[in-house]
Amino acid sequence: MQKIEPMTLFGYNKLQAEIKDLKSVKRPAVVKAIEEALEHGDLKENAEYHAAKEEQKQIDNRLADLAQLIANAKLVDPSELEHARISFGSTVVVCDLNTDEEMTYTIVGSCESNPDIGLISFSSPLAKQLLGHEEGDDFKVKLPGGEKKFEIIEVRYQEIVFECI
Image: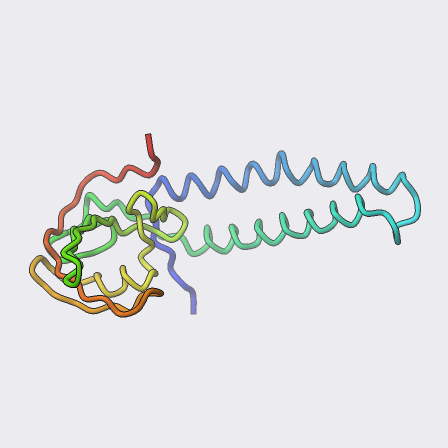
């Protein structure tokens, strides 16, 4: 079964840019490093060769992962979705019922998440619990720090800012 990866155009373009960089800059540089290391002779004790081969393997693995993400990508324009209930692209203000601390999150694709600025992946435990709820709902979620109980204060759509200014 194909795993759909919802993302915005920003996320899709970010993945494409990474693929381009890996294919046109990083991989050719590693191939050149391998060729130069081969000129040093004995491969058994050639640390430069082994390091470059390992880097090439990591780049190839990342390219395969990116190809899979692109193949499964489903572009979503959050501004076209209904946000009365929490969905992809919704910005949500929640209150931790134990501490009364309010937090704001926006639900985005996995390649777009940046928890430091409130962008959480739709596949994160918190986002999975948020999806489908509406203002006023309470819910519990098991997080790495233990189970927490939240109240949803506000659900809205606002243009997503993906990077800190």
